[in-house]
Amino acid sequence: MRILKTFAVGAVATFAAASAPAATLMASQILTQFNSVVSGDFSTAHDVEGRLVANNLVKGATFYNNPSNTPSAFSAVNAINIGANGGGNINNGGSVNYVTSNAGSFNLNGSGGSIKHGVPTFSMADFTTPLNALESQLAGLSNTNGTLNAADPNNFTFNLTGNASSTSVFNLTTSQLGSAANINFSGTASTVVINVRYSGTVGAQGQKEFSINGNFNDNSHLGTHIIWNFVDTTQVNFRGWYGTVLAGTSTVTNTSAMNGFLYAANFVGDGELHDRVFAGTLPAAPVPEPTTWAMMAVGLAGLALARRRQSGR
Image (cartoon, rainbow, N blue to C red; front, side):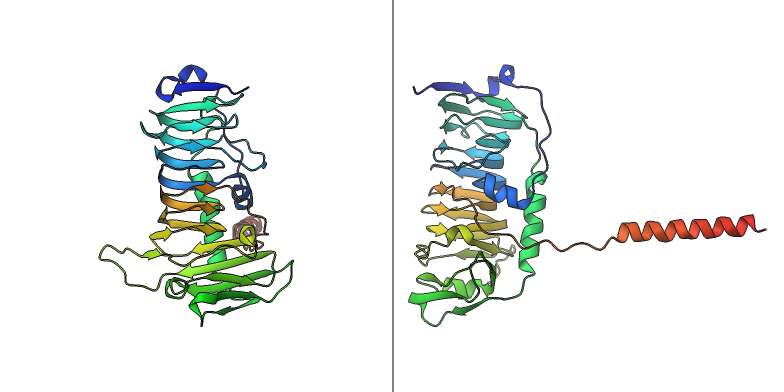
């Protein structure tokens, strides 16, 4: 039986349970538990199939209408602030979790949904810190296990030369990607990392806006294994798209469905966000030098030496 509950969020303090801090998530967990993380303003009039995390939910429509089965301690909608137009429909028994303030109204469809105040409590840094670290790590990777054939814009092809358990890495510019009319992939890989760096004219205020006009229909069905890492853009305009998109410095817009996880500074959606869980394997993070322990060891050794000298006087 379909259950419909309408809550005005600003008057829902009585529904709030005791706040509890969220467990620290790794980047790999964020990519599989959430449909989108937006560190600034999130605004859309279209469906968001999976879990959302946003700093400011400015405008919403229908949420959680086709979520993945990946479990999470978080709700369908998680926001620091929810504006007056930030409400909408929450399907499949999903809940809303806000941290600071709410002025929106939500229709909770299905059993089990509720409005929560900080359950769990979180900050945007809980999400942006691991995602920014992932972006930086991927941006430092060199080309491997692949060649790019960009000679024919109608057959702009990423040739994967590894195997089903390998990682292929490509580094290209926005000019190169922008020249593609049809994007294809040939071969196989566990993970495909594509770092895209801005190569166009920089605006007077430092704008690095890039529009993708080519078609990417994921005919090879590799979308859930691809990461598009937009290293330094400030705005990326998509049509339809497949794969995980990391664009933490950019406002992202779309005019058709994006299929995969999205990380952006802001999102203005004229198309749906489809919850396609990342199925690849992230490269292992480099092990940092234990400088802190080394410095402590040197300090303790110096202290011990000084004491021996004093005792010998």
